[in-house]
Length: 444
Image (cartoon, rainbow, N blue to C red; front, top):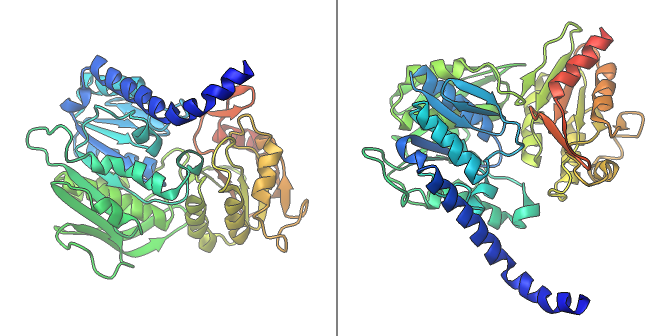
């Protein structure tokens, strides 16, 4: 038997990628056919990039609802089919082709005029979105992530680019132009700009010297960051408006620009864009503030990539008067190269670090913690002084809240609004916010 295995192993290695691709392609074709290509009956907007996708989708959904539209939405954290709205508990951003096409069919049945789909590189590479006829493709940013799957940054970029590459050639709906919306502040913006589209819109912050296309560019100036909000002036080809976001951080200005640019491309008025952005109070697990009676500042965020960490810490460090107590881990069976990078970034900004579990899967949580710890600054962080290794996430959160004093910020990263945690024994129920509130009740 072992001889047979050795004989066929090179053949399997040679043809497995092609067979894998064919399998996924057939699944995509079958799913779209079974459900009758529902995307042909709605305006479909795909949002891709490394960070910000979920927030952009939710911002855009609020703008469209403010404009009187019935909206379908599929993101990492939530799903809408018009008036029906629920939490996404699958731990998949872009669902399997059958689940996704079934969801689009439900949106059509509920008379949705728009479908907003958070679209991942995995989904594009695995043909999960085959038969979804996008009308608008939105690019947020591209940074280090998913190297366990894509192996190289170039492969990762190419997979994301499929959304834009296929846009112009997909089924055309009467009177609807194929539209690309691109972050030109991002170094990879030019890559996504190379693909054909009937119209293109760009967005940037005023650190870009000259907007690339003044009649097609939206940009932000006069950014004022606060503890739980950010204000700025939105400039569009048709006028300017003061924007108030109930979400902190400069990176959320980029997210708002992506949503506003898409809405502008769809012909929505500046007033409705302004009202829609103001109507969004929080996105679950995205810079989510946890109110409490103990006077502690607690924020939950889904940041789990180096760029996500950098942006969250950069946004919060200037407005925290006391210590930043960071609680985080890194997913098992995923990109291991980013683990020490997360540690390095956190050690630059945080004052106390508590390393813990985050979807360890079959890996030993302590080994993941050690991998992250390799990136910490040893001159700044010492074990049991301001560095704590606590595999149990609940105990880690408890430790952070016990350490916190007035003026400090407890920052819980990487789990966000997920409702389950993947461990060696399988998926177990988990809610970051519920655990925080439970610990707070015990402390009170």
